[in-house]
Image (tube, rainbow, N blue to C red; front, side, top):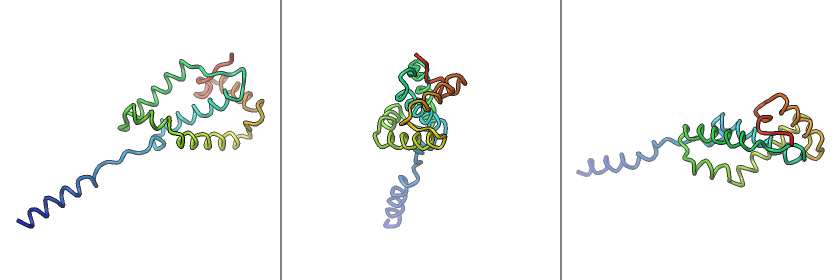
Length: 134
């Protein structure tokens, strides 16, 4: 009887250990790249008075990213919590700033980001599709 009880409790104790752990949203390439593109577009539009967000394109793009997150096991609520999290936003800002700096762009110098934004819009890159010239 003791052996049976021990075996049952051992099995129950191991159950949760074998649970599948979801990757973070940063570990899902489509979500990671998508949020990165949104972050770059945001930095451009914040620093250029004549470039603004293409809201409709942005909404469709975000829903596409939410779809990737859902396929990875995230609910809409979990995805929104991640996107709205201040720490995750700071991670994204840091990555964007580092990337722009690697291109020789400085958010302190407006013309460099504006020129970069115009090129992205002209080339119809994913970043450019999120922006428009007003």
